[in-house]
Length: 316
Image 1 (cartoon, helix red, strand yellow):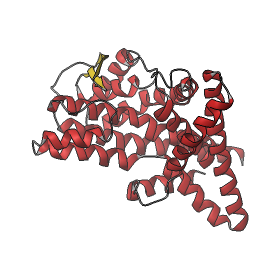
Image 2 (image 1 turned 30 degrees about the vertical axis):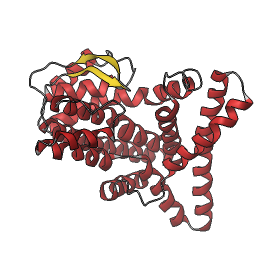
Image 3 (image 1 turned 135 degrees about the vertical axis):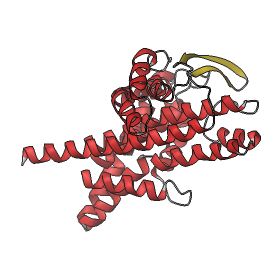
């Protein structure tokens, strides 16, 4: 299993997420869209319908990936290995996180704030059209921080625990949250289960980031002690039970302050301030946050693989 995950990680670093490649997560998104309306009609209680909806999408995602890999393995074991690697590869997003963030960094370096806002709008849900340079940097660093858990630690952890099917099930959880886990009028009750399951699935990975992000900061030449201290102090300030921890860890490592006023569909939302403003946010902080995320992913991969190998040998 460790070899499958290592190969999937390497594949992600090489390929990222090319749009031409069939992607299981896009299939999960299609399934979510197709299942929502029938379930709403079949079950009138929105919260109950949302629970059945979330459990069904996650269960089907796990089952289909398990069956596909099992059938492939019965034909040829190497085909089964290849599909396992592919599914795990599709669940992690190390390269894309860095690549999409660099798409924001490059125009900022060239003082092209208009293009930077446009690129940022592709990776965040907040309004970007009136952002100053500092706010564009803040939004990008916050996105990198949050996705260290969602796109790296969580899928790797679930792959180590339950192989490709569990990694795909986690991506179903994550996709459900991103599509229906909102407190809007439409999803306030129907999306409740999706949001809560996502919180639960990321609870342990977010707290593992409390260890791995300060360690990655040390290897990146940043303030590891500051990362640990701010994560412990400010990690629970965010309304989300999980996203505040990696945000605080990276804020502490970079010596910057995150949080503050954001606008979503022109509606202002004030988030708690995280970190100490030892230095003003500038485009270079995006590259530094990306570097920390890459190192964190490598440290987590090596640690997980070593544990799997050690446990396997203990049971032989």
